[in-house]
Length: 375
Ligand SMILES: *Cc1c(COP(=O)(O)O)cnc(C)c1O
Image (cartoon, rainbow, N blue to C red; front, side, top):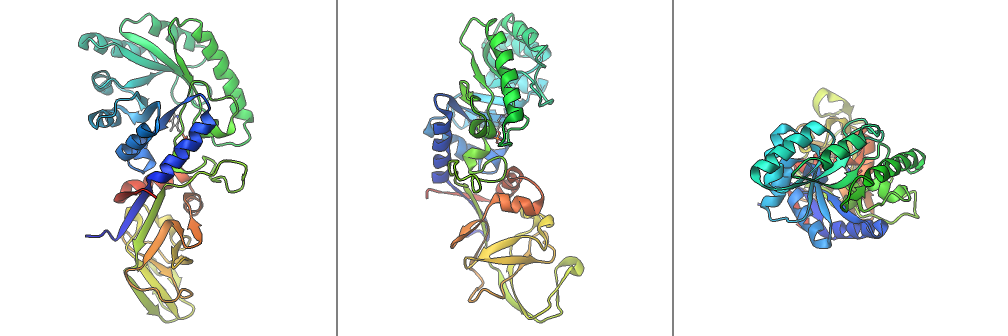
């Protein structure tokens, strides 16, 4: 049976964005970020797509995601960026995942498990240059590096840091972080006899911070078609044009005529002031179309914008189509994406939701059934 609503992910858009990232990265290899179910676009599908396109590695938040990728047959390096706990150590060693390590305690646990199972483990070490979440502070970093180098069964394969303001086009702050990372990693490299790769840039670092490329880059949001600052290259026309990969649409359940003076939705927050034609859509906050969008959001029907009226419910939303003629039950409404000559992108939805495009994609992508298209 055909779904009443669905997320469509364009593989062609993913490929287009990957190619733009690759051009921007120059000689640096690309670690494709597929955490959070590939920002709602589907981890396995996206990982396979980026692997085919020539990614140097994949990155996830937690080991459990990496295990799923290995079980699906993905053989390239898989970096576990965030969730490193005693509970993840066995899976990391067994499945040859590459953890990002920030403290010596974890190094010892990893080394013990590597020795126990007879498998040497490559790790990347993280320096904290201002993010303040994970990583060793610059002053502590040489100790961490030396400890790792002196630990049997552990191989130091990379050094990395994360940009706290990667979404800022004016790179003043990021340039300071870049300078700090360059200095700290250069010093550390002198201690490391074997080849060791450096990486710093997320999407913002890749597109906004000159010289942040190093050996590897770690774009996430750009692969899915958005700039991190929510402007998607519209105002900055000099930047390469990324292509949003996700569309979210629903079919119209019912078209209704309401007289003036009729309330719409829970709590009766909206009252018609004139005879109004409504379209009822099978979408609500349970699908990630947040209640915050009540009375604020618009959707596309017949290539035109229709305003959400009243509260969004768990599974239903009403929109005003008084100005759009000929709409019938079964027609398609686009909540995220393009229809006719108009487009509602995740940046616009994010402004209505008072959040960022990342959160819109994660929510809508993960709460709805997805299909993949090639155009
Ligand atoms: C999520 C993440 C990225 C990717 O960030 P984007 O802004 O989506 O490009 C890069 N590096 C690390 C450590 C991350 O956690």
